[in-house]
Image (tube, rainbow, N blue to C red; front, side, top):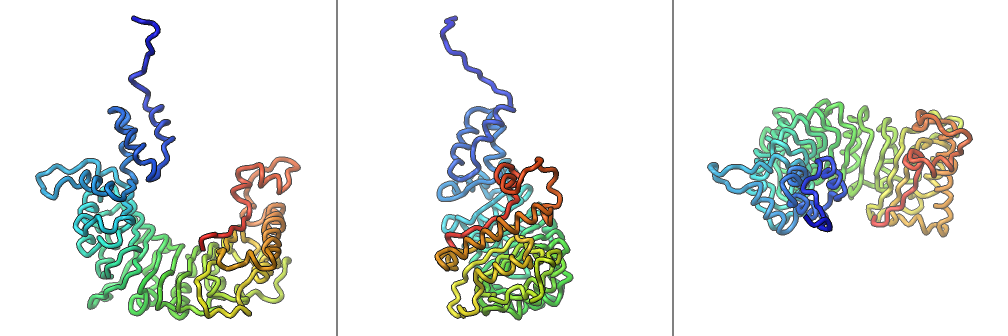
Length: 420
């Protein structure tokens, strides 16, 4: 044998193949790379095929090929594809004209043993999909936010009763249809539900029943989003939030054109456990937080639990600039330690705060949040810094947030959203 002839290994241990697989990003652009990985040989196929089908990125011709693989035929005598049992995430948000309602129902029926996340398509989700969806008993996330066809809350209620593991539910923006005597039996939410997103025509009878029957919500419900609800106003939102005040810690309120300026000033009182708030600045004003005049840094232990605040712009033209919530208002709430636990402040660029005072006010706000408040909490081991563990002797706050991974992760931040 020629000793100069290169030698190639025909086999690699599974551990090395898995290590190679971990270098391939899990996004749509690299999905062809993942497919080529599975085409190397039988061993690589066995190692990578579950990853390829776990969360497929479907668009254009990829969707047609995926349907042909998962649903080779509607005939019962045709053997079902074993690959259907590998699909955990079925994201059809990019499917508009390529799909059909019957195809969506068939995909749900084939992937039901393993499906954990389903994002419904805009146009190809209808009444014939509910039966298949109700059999996806391992489902943890159900996103109907893109659905354009009016849904029946009777079908929704029946389906939710079967999804005992559901944790996140996003209702559609489209109109809704109420069937006769729908509420003879109470609408019962999944027992493990953690996040509920309300949108569209969430008003009238549906909202009334939710408000009247707060005990139907599970104790696990800690997060709620209310957005894109044109007819929902302060009088509908406040009672709903107050009914859930014992459990809610995360709330998002935006794109609510019927809500007037200043109507949500007291939201921190309505929700005493709120730690994460995303809200349009149009719904609050200079009285946000309702801080007592006597509150000072000496009362730091009574600070509100809010840790993350995101301020957006809803584009409401009826806002009075004289009382609008501004940089001095948030500065005052932090400076007196009324929001002494605040760790992350996110501001939409469209609010124009960067241009106020040529940016000097914003720079002062950043200095207060990071250099003063966060440094003080770190040095005195308050709030989230109470259990950070041992710190290198003589290490200062600035050194800690720059040189340690936990410091970079836990430090306070002010973020500007460019696209809002």
